[in-house]
Length: 584
Image (cartoon, rainbow, N blue to C red; front, top):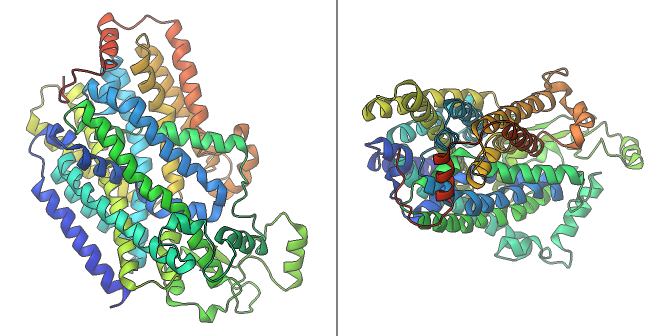
């Protein structure tokens, strides 16, 4: 069977499974809708957390970034993995013991203020919509290539699927759906990685294959990739090109942003006890590490295969996968010197001799443009793997994108129905009314998320990295100070969140979208103007520090919080006697 038939079969079966689980586990109460009734087991919750955590950015885009950034791409591995450890050890148990359904709920009660709750809801919506934009783009990208429909059509199909099981099942349905999605995505990521590792190096373990020698030779795979890269005018794959300050800033922003992500934090409210929250965090870390330690190997295999397949080859001899990716617009060939060959090289190399030599050969500039996000999806095709493996990767990518999109949509709906309507606008709303409000908010959120998917602000991982920066700038200081500094007050927390969020939004608009400097076309020229040499993806670190500084400064000039609030903070740091999550 061809790839498209296999894709229809495998994607159709997995979608039927997700919808069936959503019907079976549909929510009948607000507690089931928000936190799955608080009765999920540690292993199941660990799998669901891993699926929630490993979004389209992890599955589709991370290995793609590492393929083109090389050593510098390791910031995503370090930041996202380290961030999960930080969340699991430093925040999750304490937030779980506090017993609130949402991050705005925690901030509203901890800082005894409707203003604090409102600001937190605004921040949660900004973070979640930025994050979900990346997921919907991933959905559209997969459907575009493998079902051969327009990207916009693919996004709409994804919206309908997510809407069905997120709105019907709530957190209960999403949790058990995510268990299935974890199984699909990890199988889909590992199978082609193992195939290609054996093919390229003879090792069945991809991590060993990446550090091994090429089959039939004494040349190490990484040495071969370094040679292929320098021959084309690029820096060595294993050489770092980013400044140390930017590497540090991006890594820290991703780490602390993780610890402030509302859709990940809420997962720790779905278990019965604090002890179960710790156990599920451990399981999730183990399950996440399977993919995260494999991604660098996939990036190396993909880059080597791509260069050897396309560089200096006749365009007319390109395999079918090349032409099909061209139709998506994510891979483009422009025959600038009309020689019929694909001249893929770094025409902006700082090595003047290399550029001069290329010009002497009659080359008129790089002719191949490749979107980072296609590398994982195209990798099995480039390596000539069986069609069912190619279709499996499509199903895995959809599982990764849809699982995280569902979790984010639930955060958005809970922020609107629980934190705004129930806690502020209409405290007397019935449970049934609140449940319908949550489902209505989720429906509106899906439509907005779909618009972002059709009009994405960048490739998947870059968009997601901005969401982490926004979470770092807004939530992390308020949560950390709320748990570990009992005299932190509402004035300081609110001022810090507002300053951090506005600073991060301004920097994104200025340097990521060129809003104040000539639009997106001018962004490439703004790198020299970055503040402190820090990219938009890393600026969450600066905005977070500004948040801390403002919060602590304002706190010194304003009254301490009420004694009962200080007593609550003391209590949540005592690791005993925690019962089920309750809505006070």
